[in-house]
Amino acid sequence: MWLPLCVGGCPHYRLTTGRSCVPFKDDPEAYVLSLHAKMVEDHA
Image (cartoon, rainbow, N blue to C red):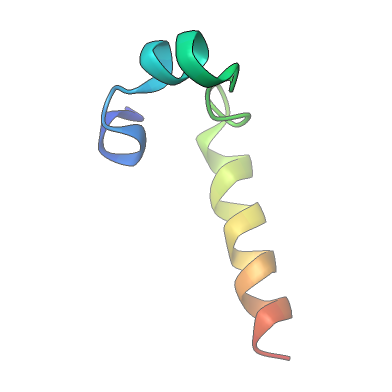
C-alpha cells in the first residue's frame, strides 16, 4: 500500500541513515487526516 509513497526505499534508508518507515504505515486513514490538517494549517 505504501510503495507509491516511499518507492520501497525504507530498508535502504533504515540501513544508511537510521530513518524508520512511515509512522502511519499501519494506519493510512490517520495519515490522510494528518496530511489534511497540515494542508489546512499551511493555508490558514
